[in-house]
Image 1: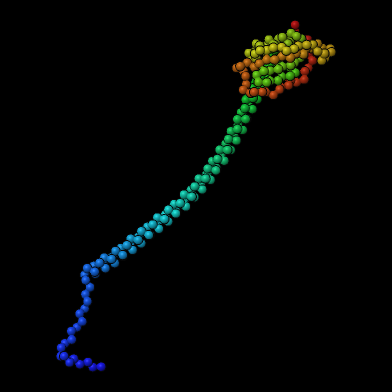
Image 2 (image 1 turned 180 degrees about the vertical axis):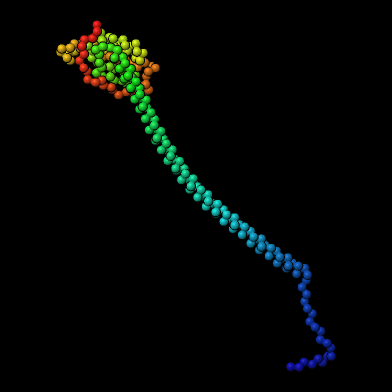
Length: 212
């Protein structure tokens, strides 16, 4: 289709619309702010994620260390229990050794006293605490008296007392006397044992008459 301008005038061109400068600047600032916020959020996200990973690693390491320390604690507790058991055994052994040494020393003391007396032998020897009960046979009453005197002189015994002394007919052809006596261990010689087992002397052998 052909258009003809009958007026003879130049048709004016349509004016272009212009965007205000202020609106352009605002849009630019908005875009920059959005971009900057996105960058900041991205950096913050990666930093927080990195810190979270480090924290998780540290937690895992602490849990492993805790488990290791618990195992060590169990080992220490077991060693302490074993040490306590061993210490109790050592204490028992030491106590028995002390009691044994005390009993041996006491028997040696009594033996040293008996050998100083003629025609006398022991048939029973018991200890309860520091109290001794002694029974024996003698060839005469004098031998019994001498034995009591020797025990007092030894310094090992206190409160030596005769309980009974009588003639017996253990051997018809030999005159013997059966006696019973008590004594206490001197304080400096007392062993720490509460009760010592009874010590029995060997079977008596008939002896001749003692010295008057």
